Length: 205
Ligand code: SF4
Image (cartoon, rainbow, N blue to C red; front, side, top):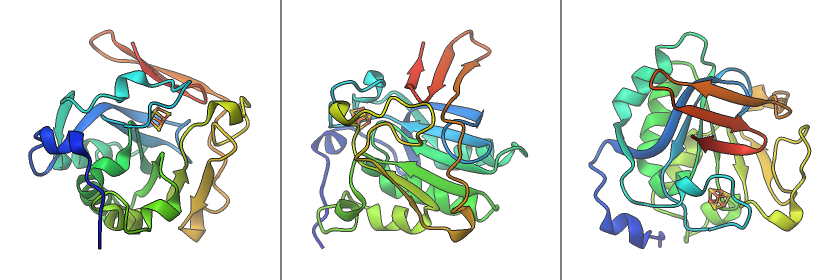
């Protein structure tokens, strides 16, 4: 099978067992069903006009975090029902995310991911390395890049532009496409930094 390699990732050293992340937050209710941890990975090639997350584009090392450290952070919070992968482009770090997903699912949590790829592309021979493994772990996938001309601009939509699709692979979650996309959350961390996330996207300020 031919899998696509990201030329940037080949130049940047991410140690085995680690992820290069843009951010992490506990107890979000606007990035998937229920109360969830969210992992924003670092790096995206698409440069979508109108992207709300410009800091996620660079593939340079931002924050290296061990998969096992993330597993502990996510599963040690009893309020978490699942974890969502966002970005950046999660599927450029699919092998490590598949490993993370496998471990949190073993502890009873569900896993969702956003991606700028279409599901069909991820199922094809041109998918990034490890895509099949990550897909096999997902309960929900929201696919498709943000297209500004197709922006929905509705707080009631689970997607940002009308080309994007919600795929529910776990039948028990089929009635759970009700995350509070009409809300924006502001998380304030101990160091004073803030993360704003919700239907307008995500910013760390
Ligand atoms: S795929 Fe997402 S993170 Fe990447 S440029 Fe587009 S909107 Fe931004």
